[in-house]
Each structure stands twice: as C-alpha cells, then as structure tokens.
Length: 118
View 1 (spheres, rainbow, N blue to C red):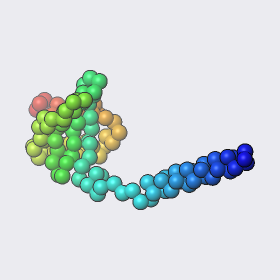
View 2: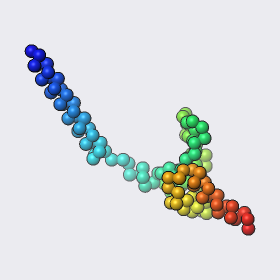
View 3: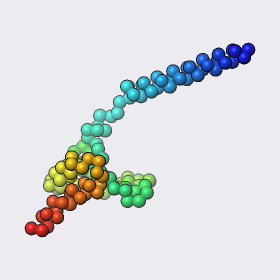
View 4: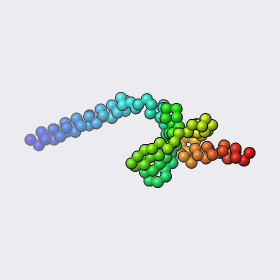
C-alpha cells in the first residue's frame, strides 16, 4: 500500500514536470510579440520625476510624443513636430543608447547653446 502512494506521487510529479517543460518550450519558441512593438513603437528615453511619476519620450508610428505617466493615468503632454528637433533627437538617440534622459537632453541642448552664442 505504501509503494502505491509513492508511485502515484512520483507519477504526478513527472506529469507536472513535463507540463512545466512544455510551457517553457511553447513560451520560448511559439509565443510571438506583436510586430509593431519593436518597429513602430519605442521608448526613446524617460525621466523619473518622483516615485511612480515619469515622463517618456516615445517614438510612435513616425511621431515623437512626450507622455506623462503616473500610477493612475497616462497623459499625452505634447508632440515634437519641429523638423530640426526631430533630427537632433534621432541623432542623439543613435549616439546615446542607454545613457538615459539626461544624456539625450544634454545632446539636444548642445546645438541650442551653440546657436545662442552667435
């Protein structure tokens, strides 16, 4: 009788282990992210203002949007439409990958400082 309980428990553990392995394989190889996630929508940079309050610069379907995010809401703060600003942001984005908001902002401000001295 004791052997029957151990055998049943081991069989159940084997089945649960196989189910877990199948789940990992399915998530790794068959779960696909939406196509637009990397191509048309991307966070360029972010700035944390307070805990759970941030500002994001987001490239979305060819537009640059400034978005405010709190724990309760998301609000569009504005859109960058100036062609020179867009070129500067895109150039800074390619140079400053991983530097964060301060790096992008300082790169964006450099040309403006140069123009004000003329």
